[in-house]
Image (cartoon, rainbow, N blue to C red; front, side):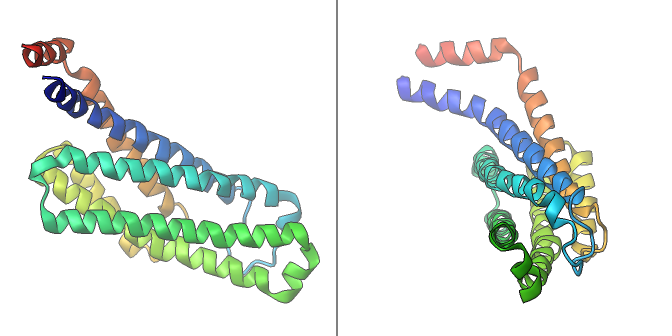
Length: 230
């Protein structure tokens, strides 16, 4: 009886956990991106004139990335759990693989940027003169704006495809996600605000999951619990 009751409670709370994790990831990711955008010039070939005034702000933004990554990893896990037996193996593999690759490359770009910022704190003049800043800036830009965003687009496409098949999200939301995913795949890093598309879409579907979960009648939960106890 107790194991059945525990299983029922897990099924009822998993969607809410996915929503909370997705919302947390979105807030942290958007905050990090905005802090970087207001502090760093968009041109990856800049000469680092922004460093004296804004390097500490960028360092704060980079420190938010690990926490966003943890929330995103939790989001992937609970969404897969929500799919349950209806999960298609092919799309589930692409879904999980693209999500993990997105996370790994996001960490890579943040690590390169963080290492460059740390070197500036230790030896400001040497960082610029040695060319390390230009190298780190270019590598960070390429990883984040090209490769990471491509994996985000693939993740969105597979999530939307699974949503259409399993109906875990409204159809219009899945179709919107496909359009936005194509934008990420085809933008080639030329659209400045394109990286915001991914966390905003995660925020949208997370709020939808949370609202759907909260609208579930309380009587349904009580009836399920009563039946398991019997």
